[in-house]
Length: 255
Ligand SMILES: Nc1ncnc2c1ncn2[C@@H]1O[C@H](COP(=O)(O)OP(=O)(O)OP(=O)(O)O)[C@@H](O)[C@H]1O
Ligand SMILES: [Mg+2]
Image 1 (cartoon, protein in one colour):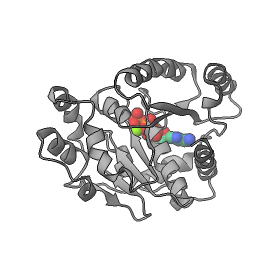
Image 2 (cartoon, rainbow, N blue to C red):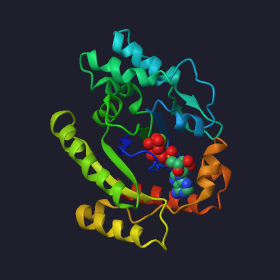
Image 3 (cartoon, rainbow, N blue to C red):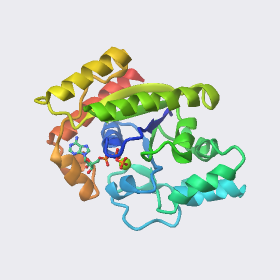
Image 4 (cartoon, rainbow, N blue to C red):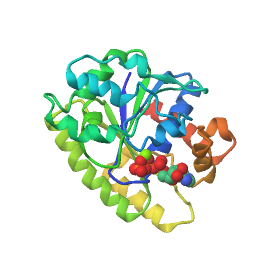
């Protein structure tokens, strides 16, 4: 049932890769997972093999909800070959950033959309775009938790502090139940001193909110996405599969 936004306002930090493979790992652990692609780039939808934009998608349902027509999110949920459920994105979703601004209850629209199906899933992950716009604010307002993936370098680290400022404001003004689930380091290279330094700095600042599991750099993760597959269906022996399964186990313990 918890809704988890995977967010941070830094492009290429591993949000989509984490959503996809964490969901696949949790599904292997027997959980029923829904993925929501809230990024107009539609990378998550494409990584799940959804290449042609489906007629019913997150934008089509948002549009209905914004016009007061009432959405039916179930008809927009796709089942992938590997059995994952996904509410796909479309390029038109970029327009929602502006359209949402003039709607009453503009930060709550995702909430209205997802509430009818929330109980049907053990976990829902929302893949956010790399900007703190209306889509990300909607995702955070509809969420119980936020998960931050991060590359272990100093510039992305600054992104965490800036993100936490937005997190505090949203928690205070829009969604009191919102909590930080954790920060996970991605594209981690054990030989890189900087990766270790960033990890230590995060541990000093955020303590046990930093996941013990790190996601190592693994080219198979990128190749799997290119083929429209999760890592378990692409190469279940890859380091990426091992790391995301370990992250899934740690996440279940935290919850
Ligand atoms: N651990 C990893 N090892 C190797 N490549 C990775 C790893 N994690 C992610 N990548 C690759 O890095 C690229 C960026 O990752 P991803 O798309 O998940 O980032 P993102 O945060 O969703 O980006 P955006 O903000 O643009 O949506 C992708 O090509 C992905 O396949
Ligand atoms: Mg992405």
